[in-house]
Amino acid sequence: MSSQYKQLRQDFIRGHSGSTFGEVIVITCVNQLANLLLIAVLSLVPLLTQPNCKWIRLVVEFFIIMMPFIACITVLSDHILAVCLTIILLTFIAIVLCFTRRQTKPIVIKELLDFCPTYGPRLPFLTNLFSTLMTCVCIAILAVDFRIFSRRFAKTEIYGFSLMD
Image (tube, rainbow, N blue to C red):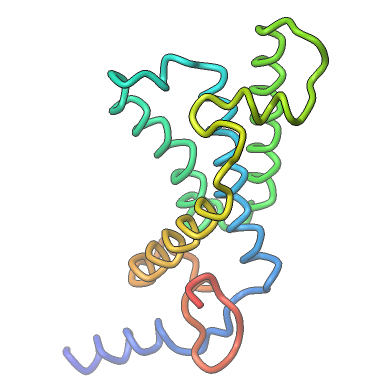
């Protein structure tokens, strides 16, 4: 029984050449687009920036930033581009709602950056990028042992490109 289990395990791990470079880039873009959506939602709902709403904000940030990524590497691994387009559409809707509620002059990028309630005029995109990349790698390392995780994102055996690499 033990040797049969060992053989099944080795067959599950062997023979993976990963995915394409573009697919991995699109998956990492999901998190960056989700960060933009979070900024738009926080601008739309200023209540979430209050100090007494930390737990609600934590839940909102988890569902906006982490859930799309987890879905993209598991159940929606064949529809990553659709997830990206959905996040872009939701971000656009939130920004339009944000500026129609303000009822001011037309949107200017500097005003959009100044209007962000949590980050001020400078958005820490590099910090977000590095932290989400680290989170992506950690989730990929942990998820590789589960069948729901798409094997093309697992570590490549000899050569190739994958999310874990």
